[in-house]
Amino acid sequence: MKELIYRDECYKVIGACFEVYKDKGHGFLEAAFQECLEIELGLQSIPFATQTPLTLSYKGHLLKQHYLADLVCSGKIIVELKAVDKLADEHRSQLLNYLNASGYRLGLLVNFGHHPKLEWERLVL
Image (cartoon, rainbow, N blue to C red; front, side):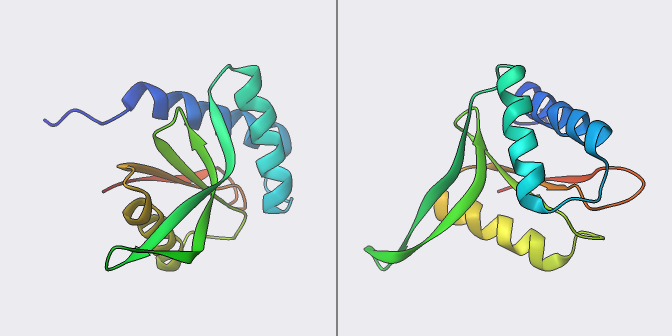
């Protein structure tokens, strides 16, 4: 069986997400969940950066346009947050685009809007 990449770091980030969901439930906007998660990551001493710009290029030319990752944790995991009823393919595509643009290998898609439990997926490039 293959080893999961960034297993320990991923486990800690998802644990922080569960902690936020346990406290706040599913009825808030994405921005509120992001703020709560930033606080929780800080409380758990998990390194992170918010609204990290991911540069885009075309045939070797940098574009003015860029993506903004909700969070980058431990300098190597993109965390894309949602507050929707259910994750959809367009959410997965968004995160895969972020991974392709950035060169990061692991992304976590986390949905705080799902009921009755937190919905999350690991996407590996």
